[in-house]
Image (cartoon, rainbow, N blue to C red; front, side):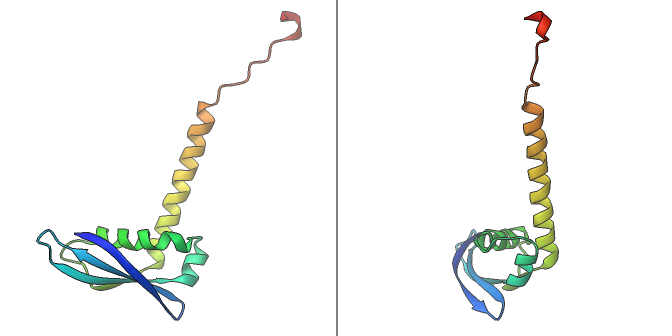
Length: 110
């Protein structure tokens, strides 16, 4: 199923994203995903990232398990921030291992 973002609305501390899912047989279904903005701030998730994260949530749900209305939970936010931290740490380790050690010649060799 392909998901297209239609827009969002604000609902008392929640951002509600509206998606349209298009199945292989071209049937369309409406979906909404709610995200608690207080929890996104707590976990350091930027508001600009939410549409893609919510679409990813819909894509990960199994074809038979998809609900027309769902919530981006705190556990999923925690998992996302953990994965981002792991990726950033791995990139730092790679960057450090690629650096060549500085070779200093002794004064008597010059």
